[in-house]
Image (cartoon, rainbow, N blue to C red; front, side):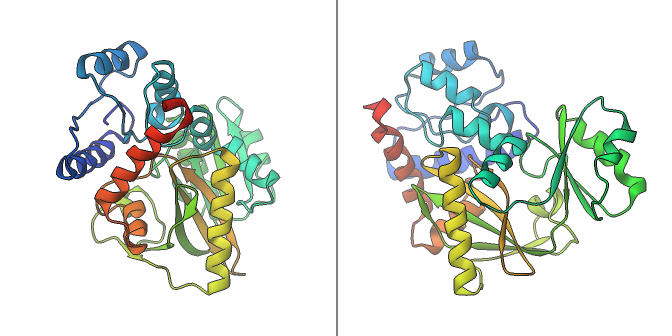
Length: 304
């Protein structure tokens, strides 16, 4: 847990919750807080702690984009969550969306803009797009660097904010509808969580500041719509090659069709996070979720 990304504090909360759950279950669990995101440091932590299996609660770049998974695979150490390739694909919103489209899944209408491209060409590439826009870094999570804009005059500021987190930015048309998330646990979709922000948009503040968002689980959706959302989430999970767990964020548009926004391979794991909420609605307690993820890590063919 930890790391140096913009999601460090959220990761520490997830890691602490998992640590408590595993200790209370009887595991000899210890925290490995990452301060230096290098292979040398990860191998030092592994060697000095003597751990036999790693529970990844690292949100953000290093923990979710495949780099940490690559190091653990080289060290032949079992770990929870998707492997290196799936993690890398999911973290890249541009590549993952192309794969989703190829698999027949719906995604928002979007454009990719590269850093350094003259703003004239950036704006030209958005011709025909309707406001409001959603502007986000192509490789960040937790709504980091995201902006919702409804006026052309705000475009440059929003692009600058997103480019602060990487060299590629995704600009997409805002889809009006019901925001949901579908967690997939060991290949099976869990009950749907509906997200109802009290602000106009579900941004970082709405996501993490208490009282700004209401969550309904299971979501009160038409049965056919709910089933389609769960099926699409499972397809997205398998399209990227995920394993163990992931959380698929979606919008149900005004026609009742699910539109995939992104896949989170290391979802929040505090006792009140969305993935544990969905598991609880399926009758699976937080400690059982954590235990099962460790079991899945140890059952993986490369771990035997």
